[in-house]
Image 1 (tube, rainbow, N blue to C red):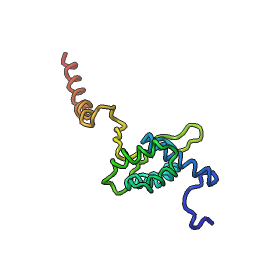
Image 2 (image 1 turned 90 degrees about the vertical axis):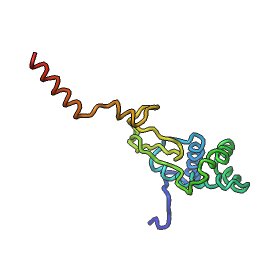
Image 3 (image 1 turned 135 degrees about the vertical axis):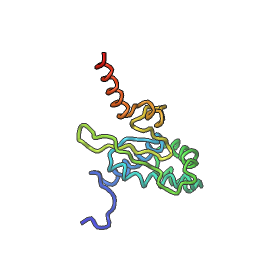
Image 4 (image 1 turned 180 degrees about the vertical axis):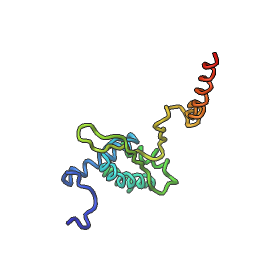
Length: 158
């Protein structure tokens, strides 16, 4: 029985799993959006939130703890300067998980995990097009039905 053993094992031993999480969190903070499996994304949420909280603290011990976990010094400096400033007033919940597709090889559920402050375009709108523009360009079903009836009556009279 796995009583009091939290976390997913992901088919790896402890050191491999820890290296995987460190790598994924470093990539997420560096690129602000990555695609991975759902299980991995759910596991790295807590680590990412912890790193951003360290960045918000901003003192030397917090920077050293972040350097001990993250794999890149440039990512740590970005975390403490840019990312922490963006989430200054937010008490938690810095990441968002969006389901995207199933992987072709093994049908694993893939998701995008990203930092919340980054703006997400709607899947139905084109980049640079707002929701209002999308709705204004699309005629309603009632207008199409009325147009087809009016067109058919004109052709019958001639």
